[in-house]
Length: 361
Ligand SMILES: NC(=O)c1ccc[n+]([C@@H]2O[C@H](COP(=O)([O-])OP(=O)(O)OC[C@H]3O[C@@H](n4cnc5c(N)ncnc54)[C@H](O)[C@@H]3O)[C@@H](O)[C@H]2O)c1
Image (cartoon, rainbow, N blue to C red):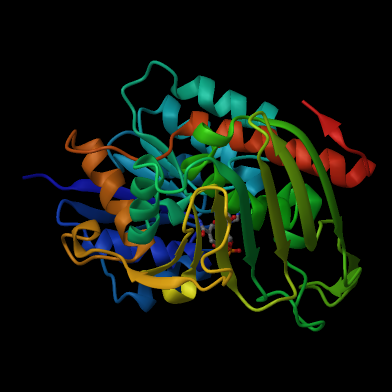
């Protein structure tokens, strides 16, 4: 059988995680890579010991007929819309990294472009593909939490924390669109959306605060340059059903993706460091919010049925879902409408942060 010809546009950090998925997939092959820095594309191919893969410097040359059937867009945010729209016009399936776009208007254009087309389109909210998250979703749907009161999401990533870390696109508003808002909080907001929004209701009010901790960095040309994107963030949101959502992100704390769900019957904590375990606290009766007046959570291992093929890595699982959806044998967990909706809220969070005001929706 002919394999799915895959192209990767942007061969940086996250492209390597996607490549692990392509290597695992039985019905895909990497046909082409594209990077505005060809030496970066070569480094990428050498890292995986890949030969015979076409290398492009301009993505438009890769999107010509007969080269690829699907692409992964893993470039900085500023080019997502342009590339994804061109790919969709060429009839190519798209896995586009988050944050979907620079703003909701751009994200809308992307979602409109794929509307009505027989194309698989998805946004890289890879945390949805963690087996534990699927298990938690089932616990929620089985009513284990009662009425969900609170969703707290924290996502920290410290790679850029050192003061001598060179300025990169994530520090520049014109390339990233926002800082930790799009980079990190888009993921925790998506987790709220995936797991709890249906029950907690839509966001009706929000307020966000954040800061830039190191205001200037040395760029690739050795010049000092102003950091223009947010580096820390705290968001408070109220939902239609009297629920609260709080999201916290920082570039200055050790890497951690964590969330906490408080319901009227039980609470749960999940952290990526205990990948296959959820921490669960069931109250003695609904509304008690405790057990024997103690607050001890019990670790529960995620049942093996949540990873039947023993693949747990979220990026691999995400790619396999993308492949299967293209082959008509499965579905992806997000699409461009999911990405657009997320972008609308990232824009509102940014507005609240920049204007220092509470926004009613
Ligand atoms: N889902 C996740 O968990 C996750 C994690 C990290 C990054 N990301 C997302 O992935 C994307 C890339 O992030 P990264 O950390 O890999 O960045 P990176 O800087 O490591 O890599 C980006 C690459 O894209 C190349 N590039 C820039 N503009 C290009 C263009 N127009 N055409 C072709 N190549 C171009 C750069 O030269 C670079 O090699 C971002 O959208 C980021 O938010 C997602």
